[in-house]
Length: 144
Picture 1: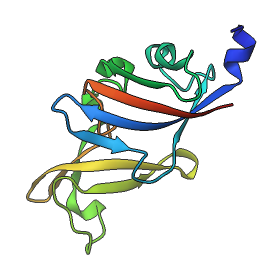
Picture 2 (picture 1 turned 180 degrees about the vertical axis):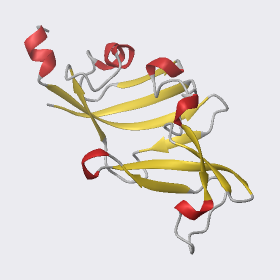
Picture 3 (picture 1 turned 135 degrees about the vertical axis):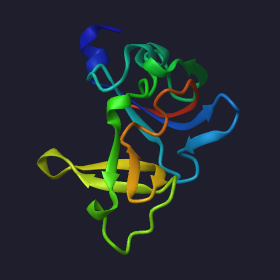
């Protein structure tokens, strides 16, 4: 496949993301909506792209990636200690709750509450799977 063909190729797959303990972190099968991967547009890590570039309709492919090649390493600079007053008074905050913050250009940045100590709320803005080795189980349903 030429470089030009690779840049315009999309692969639709049903996907399970499995953690090292064997639990499923995410699955497109539950929503019935396959994931779309655009090969060659820079949105995928080189290691992920290398695993899927030759996939064809009907292929099933499982592979495991290290954190740096999957959702990245956990960045300690993305963990913030915030005062309770920065959250709505009626918001229930407890570890594991996802909160949303306004980002640049009106975007939303999700963060997970990690810890509550008095009025100090620890929020982690890393991707929930950052720092984890994960296995992708793909079932190709369409190649565009």
